[in-house]
Image 1 (cartoon, one colour):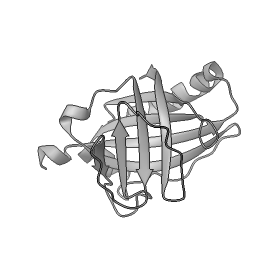
Image 2 (tube, rainbow, N blue to C red):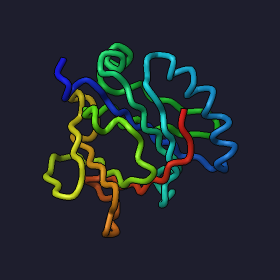
Image 3 (spheres, helix red, strand yellow):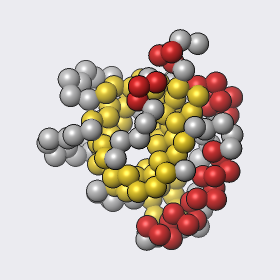
Length: 160
């Protein structure tokens, strides 16, 4: 496996009315159990606009462990009594990009597009719902979600 495809970043969104402390208390045991499947680390972010999602997790995996656990590139759907879960799937991650940013803007795009001011990541498999994801560390302009892309402004709140 090439160094370019040695790691995968998986994004999992959460929609909930739970306050941050309650959400993190209920999320931590689940996240700890899934982390034991070979994940390097998990970072949870609070989102600026909570209309679509409240939180998003950035899970970094060695590619081999991720594909062993999720051969289609996307875990199955999940839901609890208080939390709806949206699986964005896995995207190729370069070794230089493993460390978490404190804040970022994520663009999940249905169609591939060029980006001069962000890091473009391609989906791992055809089953991943968005063709590519773009991450910007600094987003100078306000961009809204559309039918073609979902946009999330993220601020780090917890690591496992």
